[in-house]
Length: 291
Image 1: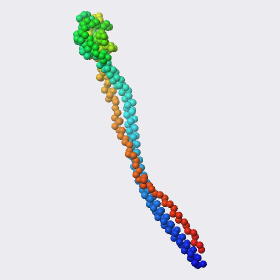
Image 2 (image 1 turned 90 degrees about the horizontal axis):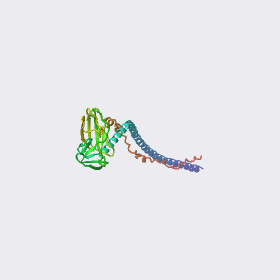
Image 3 (image 1 turned 90 degrees about the vertical axis):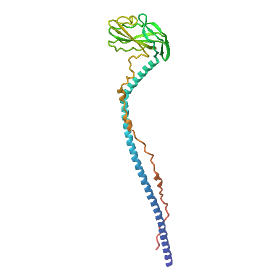
Image 4 (image 1 turned 135 degrees about the vertical axis):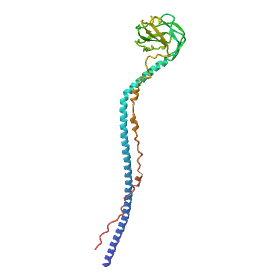
């Protein structure tokens, strides 16, 4: 009976020793797991710090972007304000270019030294002229007694410019300008599909003048002839674009556009998160020692 109790006690002690051994093994595994967790926590802290840093970069970028948007709005408002000015300027440029194109495609290349003709109410071309109409070259031979085109009466004590033009067939037209009381008269527009080659100014004093009726040599009539390359009808195309129009266009806000995208966020420490939960060792609580 005593031997049986000793055997049971030894068995119980062995169970306790086994249990304590298993607990020791599990404690070692737990320590390993806690060490891994500590390492992982450190990695998470580094990752969070990186996220925080990149967040600050993003905040800076968003702030710059907002400033740039404000600058763009300012610029858009300036463009909207200047739109009418730009339209006006473009229309002026368009009109000037059309005028320049017309004058360069219809112009006299070699003038003819035009003067009063031999007969009454005529003019003459003393040297052959060369001229362009729609960019095609034509010539007009020396010609005297070219009949003056009939026009309205020019009043006494006035000044008036008369334009001499020619068509592709060589026919000459004289066009009366607007008469003025001062010596500031300008040329009339050149008839369509014709080229101007000369002009003359009539000043009346104690007489009237009617083209095609009044002789250029009549009393009270003073004529002054001019040879022309093209008719300057008074449209001063280099100056119609007002300096104020150009000066009104301002866009200084563009210099404030400075936002740049931050570098791509990286998380090199993310790979350090590798803690794994250890598997159970199978330790069991020993059975109660029998009495």
